[in-house]
Image 1: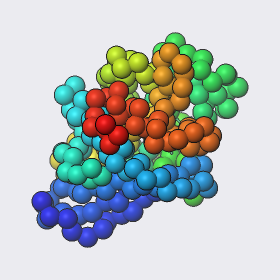
Image 2: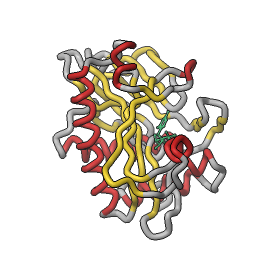
Image 3: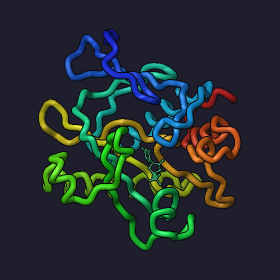
Image 4: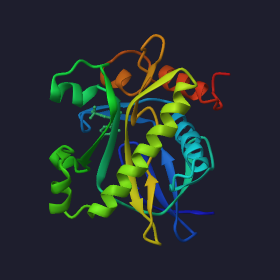
Length: 240
Ligand code: C5P
């Protein structure tokens, strides 16, 4: 597969066309952003860590039968994925109260939820990614009610697989964000990334945060936290 022109550059990734129809080339960048781009930094090694972690987690989800865009990791910071049209929704699944939910409802961070909660946010930087009701999704014509049902079913399946996968490695999956896309055949596929940038991951024994909150809240070294997650997942670490 040959890399062709740049199609899109986001906060954390660059996406290129390839000489194969329906295949994209994704490069993970060393940049970290938070609060809708207000806080920014370059962190050497972050691109490699998120590429490795996302590749391991998508491979796990493929084994579990979850339809997704991942094809293969091709270098430390790059992977090939199937081309999809991204549905502009951020699908957030929560197992423990944290972040914006703690703030919105006034519940202490760390309070477990009896059943997982799903939320939809509008992927729109100008509007600051607002929380959406299903009726808002219909008004905006972002997805049909049938598609919303599929997104929910897939998101809960991902939650089951990843909660167990992390738990066996001593990590609590507190919450995470997924994105989905529609491929050339019209099928809904899990897309984007799943990494400590998009999940809250807490050490089960110490409650140490091993995710992007380390950067958002200035809690220490982001690369140490992400490296710890990669090692627990059994990935190749640059330090060993
Ligand atoms: O900020 P909030 O508590 O709503 O985030 C819920 C989860 O979704 C967190 O794991 C966070 O990292 C993730 N998220 C994300 N991208 C966003 C918003 C949230 O990956 N734009």
